[in-house]
Length: 298
Picture 1 (cartoon, rainbow, N blue to C red):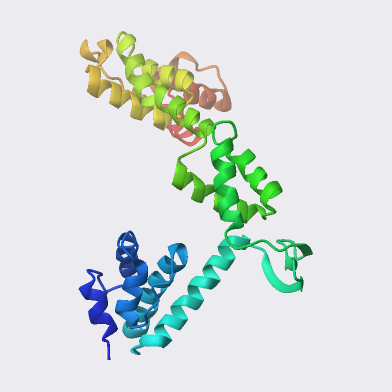
Picture 2 (picture 1 turned 180 degrees about the horizontal axis):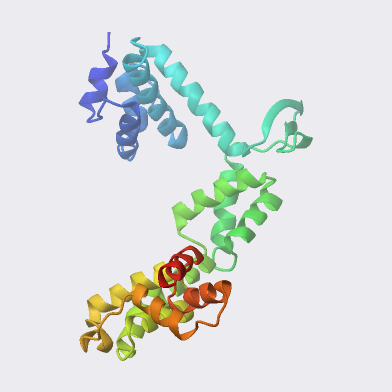
């Protein structure tokens, strides 16, 4: 009897985790999936082709390792092949039909399905692979003119898909053939534009005559950023260009506590609320901080 785990490991597939094993198996799928199915199950199924063979191989790996490692049961041979083939068929059925759930055949050439809203839909039966082939043809035909949203709407209308099914097909085709031109332009535009960090460095270099507070105020207004963000950009600019002239000149740094006392003395006629508002503006602090400075300066 074939020891399935040993055979899987001989194929170069790591078996400590079924997730890792399936990942390894997918990298081997450029070889003959059908022949590898035969090796691990002992079932000669060289007639399997394309996606059916690939998915059957991947599911066989997953089922064998999960049963051996998690359930401590070895599923082998015909049973392993049968479960893997059934799982592959079910997966591809969902893929071809999007999210429409098959109910029953109404007639030879029609079928009844349920859409995302639970409504019954009767339509002409589509051959397996028709949506796949249709999505490939439509994507390549319209990739240079349509956006992501437009392409998904085209799949919905032309291939009778649900929105979620059409979105799945869109991402598959994007992976196969590259992004739509509209997306490519967006990516190029984003790369071509200056980042805020780059703009901040340039602003810093162009305004070395400003002191730290003035530079931060400039960043807030010009870069449309918050004070913490502006502070980060200030230090980034300082790292590139060195200290601004005011800092370089060695200006004596006056503490906010001293400034608060000076402001209080110069504006003794103001009420408490007016003084706190003044502190908030002049000391660039919060209301709680301004209140603390108010009581400290009295």
